[in-house]
Length: 400
Image (cartoon, rainbow, N blue to C red; front, side, top):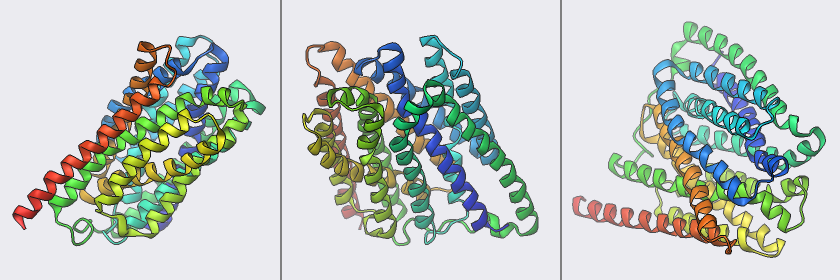
């Protein structure tokens, strides 16, 4: 089996993972609202807890994958998530559902760094952008489809479906993983060069390593800020849906627009490499994220929310793409770099909802306090990126 054929299997694992994880986690907030009466503040705290676990577990999951192998990490991750979700289908207590979410999040951290590394290994500087592009389109498509259909699935299948559907998908992943592992061993034994591939060339061909590492640092800084906005929005969508009179099914249809906008951005960025190592696009995406975030959460009409979702998806798409592309482009330890990339996501998942919940707790009479507090953080992130890039530019001029 060739490397290209194996990677089709890795993309299949990734797409299933994207649907399963997005369906459970995004609609967990609707479940908590309906079952336990959770409002925006409680759901923000739940999201922040998920981010706190993810922030540390993803870094360790990446190191585990690098040390023990990508397939070993996937076995641990898929099995843990499946077991946690099966428990979730039987748990009744509130504390039990928090525990299920924590264990599930820890298991998920073993999957994404390994999948990112598997689709990137053996690629050259010429072929890596295409692999990353397909990877991004696959998970974005799976996540968008999960959010679009998730509300309808929740209404049709009921609460247990929230846990049993993704658990069944993880079982499918485990079966496919075993099949791929056997085929990979045979391929390595017969033609190791085709599976292992050539080492990466220098970053982006003509960029010096120092500048490439600077952009990697900027991307690792910015990606948490993007996920501050993403997970603040996701956690309060049940409240937003109530405000606009949307059922979970219609909230899934309407609020999935930014998911598909992000997917469209991934397609454009994959086909057009002109954004690589260009700071103007990067800082513009950060500023657009902050503006569209405020409009989505505070607009009283639906049409501005629709427009803002398109802008938001495009902006966070470029930020995420930058982080993953530079992580895979700059280093050889792809599992570890993938873990750092995912840990940065976890930092954002934690910080945004935590700040939003704190603002709501301190200013309970101001329901928009959380949105403005997170927006201020996003602008601070853009300012920090600009300062770092300015100092780097001055250094480049002095040494050129």
